Image 1 (tube, one colour):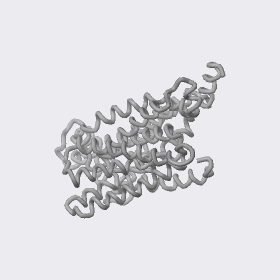
Image 2 (spheres, rainbow, N blue to C red):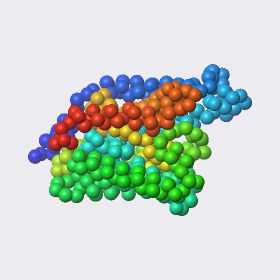
Image 3 (tube, helix red, strand yellow):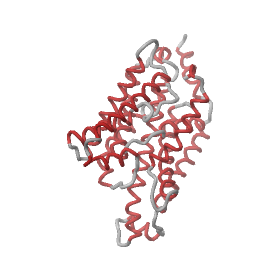
Image 4 (cartoon, rainbow, N blue to C red):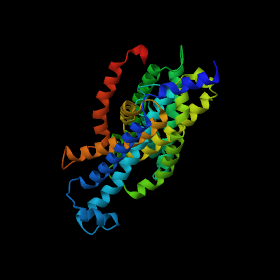
Length: 347
């Protein structure tokens, strides 16, 4: 096959939608995100007005309403960063594995990060934000390698179904190990259980600062992997024929996703299903071209997690539902629908 023929094959699956329509959708999503950010600052157990918001934005907290706004601002920023990271990581993992069921939670990556953090707290008495982040990234990386290795065993390569089963089994095993580590430690059990639910409450700028460099590097690596993921989507043989180094492309893209998952889990706890739902929704809007899909998943992930946080503040007032619970309520039926739509052989 000629180089021109290979190039046409490379582009043919990506040419279903116009760039104008994609741009309009991206502008609409960005506008929605801005509106959700404003709503997140406004909505809460205490009513605030615009004068309180404008004053709090300049660092003043002289009244109770201004103090409430000062707490909601870092919470909103954390929800945006965590949602963007998990949405992008989910799209990367689905692209790397060519698995429609890939998700940081389903593949065991989030639970691997959680186990590493819990071990660090219980056995090594880690307390700093940097130690949490490094532990979570190491755990996420080890879990990803373990799941891919298990999914590659036996006849054939790491099929989507085998990876999903290996990830689900690994998540259950790691969750049991977390309980085993925490059970004898009553002094940390309450904090660990609360963190394991997954949430953005209690965010402060001091908690956000250590995680920013890791998220920034993860975002850059992941977004720059778009063209390589387009090649991988054509299959390993054709991608290799186009000059792509398959193992390197997968490793680099996966590293970016692991950074995003590990850093987010360290700050928020394990938040499941968001990385599964967002890429599927974005494909309905922009198709399978990762040059568009990855930015869309980033913005849409931020929108979904921020919306889940807002809903969690409203539905059980004056208490709150953590975003981990809200995303699970959304994601579990979505996961079942995906499985029902596709035959086992097609997975």
